[in-house]
Amino acid sequence: MTDTKQALQRQRIYQLLFWTAVITVFVLFLQAIQPILLPFVIGTIMAYLFDPVVDRLERAGLSRMRATAIVTVLLFLLLGTALTWLGPLLYHQLGSLIAVLPELLREAQDIVEHHAAPIISMLGQVNGTEVTEQQLHNQQMVNTSEVLKGLAVSGAAALNIASLLFITPIVCFYLLRDWDKMVAHIDRLLPRAYADTIRTQFSLIDATLSGYLRGQIIVMFILTIYYAVALTVIGVKFSLILAVIAGLFIIIPYVGTLVSTALAVGIVYMQFGMEWQTIAVIIVYLVGQMLEQQILTPQVIGERVGLHPLWMVFGMLAGAVLLGFTGVLLAVPITAVTGVLVRFMVGRYLASPFYTNS
Image (cartoon, helix red, strand yellow):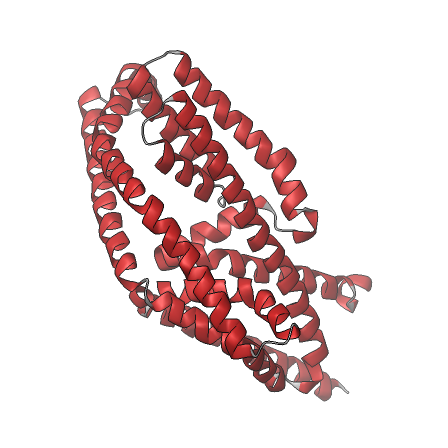
């Protein structure tokens, strides 16, 4: 009996080492192919989101091929029309915003030098080191330079993304066409002893992920429209690009809202100074935050998703470190999978002798 237990423990250790090695190799592989990964990730996400639509068209009597073609063509016609209509305006506003960012950074430096420098100097004296205003200014210049370099790299990355966008519809089409076949093939490969358990967990992952992604897209769209209208009425420059940033950044809980609000307030302060417009923009973002937290997220996404905001922040930061922007896109599904699996393991632990007999 003891030998059987030891053999079972060794088997579990080998399985753990095997899957750890598989995950490590997979992450390294993703890092190696990162430059070409983005259109495939976007195509996969779109195929996942619109597979239920294709399934409904199939049930209505269309073949899988025709249903996939209709959904793909309509989807990318809609996106293409939106880009044709809004693209030039967004591009112009983004270029103008990047042009004024150095001035915005200088304004921030002046505020830091006049208000924060004495505090930092005092803290330095407490720690036994003297921090001079010149050292602080030099550090700020280095930080500004790094930010501008990052913007240049981001601009080049945006051009690269635009050049690869034609791959995304192809990826989306073929994945949509073969989605059910791929799911059935993966199901056949599951180890028979654990197949039911794995199916149950995948069902929970699908419910969590689909609920979060679809709900979050709706919330982002509503808030983007709200910010665009409100900022345009106030007369803020770059209102459209600021609205898009605010809408997109809500996917990063707390941090995204803080960053988008700080950027908008900085822009409107440069434009109007401390006038009513600046106060109005602050109120607009406060109302937007309350609208998101108190109404949209509970009603559209709901509590059933079960993804804690700290999980999302951690997942997106980890994804950004590992794979850059592509990692941020992958962070949502990976975080959803991780959350479901952690809850599953905690449940197994609570039902195990390790917990009940301790």
